Image (cartoon, rainbow, N blue to C red; front, side, top):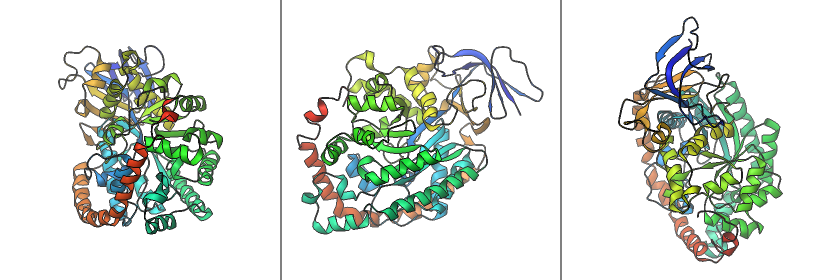
Length: 509
């Protein structure tokens, strides 16, 4: 059934000067797409006509980087640097495969929280522990499809041993730990073949689901966690299958230090040398990029997914927003996972992105405007994920947020609704979330499933799983001390944030 909103405030978020200026308009949605925008629209037969006078309608938000797995580790650690936090939230030892039902429930909870928080599309770097399988991927796709959100889901892969992702490993780790870690994970043709086989299976699963809302992307975890052969194999496969390539890129100072130590150049320079920079790349974080790194990414048309909340929680640093924009980098926004940022609600990320630059950049002219941040969360995020949405224009997918301007104090008094949406509003102002012309959330509840029953079942299953956490932590305790020493050593070295990084930073660290 067509839906027509009369006299709503509409934010089209296109790239015209008026894209981020709300204007009074009618909005017609039909057959999953925006059919028309403008005043005095004709009403097709059978149309559901709605009063839009107190409503703001804008494109749905796009979460360009998250990890649904982390739902199970939410609230389990204090703030720690990434390299230490990872041992808690991504323990390499002692983790057993999850039951299929718990994989489904965990992902469905992530989808529900994402939708309630304003996201109509996500890139989920799934990263199943201890390893992904066709069965676990099937549960992930089913959960996202069942809630109705768009989801690009990855197969995550790495082949560099955990100890070799840290500088000075041979001096810091006991010989037994070094040999155990390197024996558990090492580059091999067999690993690459198995990953590509999993990827082919996941592509078939995603494409077979009705509605076209799920997709697959390859995900070499990070350049310093992958061999060159694995990086090339992922990229070649993505080109052949026309997929996105997702990776973590220079999230921490330590990663920049490891890149210099291993390759004698930056990670971006190394990717460029391998021929792996292009428009299909979606790189999470990008905090420790040099000015020349940014220029290369901008020239390649790559996307950087900025994750301000997890960057703050883990002490990773502050992305150089203006340097990215000036270099032509396509900037999107992400929440990161529910253990590193503790939320999948995109409006919180939007506000953090708008405020974070003021902590390191003294020139207010360099701070992002509310309109810029909202554009990253909608238009450029959608472009990076290839959803086709992100703007309100005829023929575009009808992925929409409907915000009630009169229901609470966020828009009272009503001055600049874009600024108030970015700085004042939260998810309570969102009354409906639409994906592909379908209302999938109304008044905070899914229209597709019984979300109360879903939460109840997830709590029961997760509580049983939580009983295994002490054993998992015990298995990983022997890694924490050497990892702390590696972090301290790198932090104190002249290379760690030294002149070789500072000379070309040109931004806020």
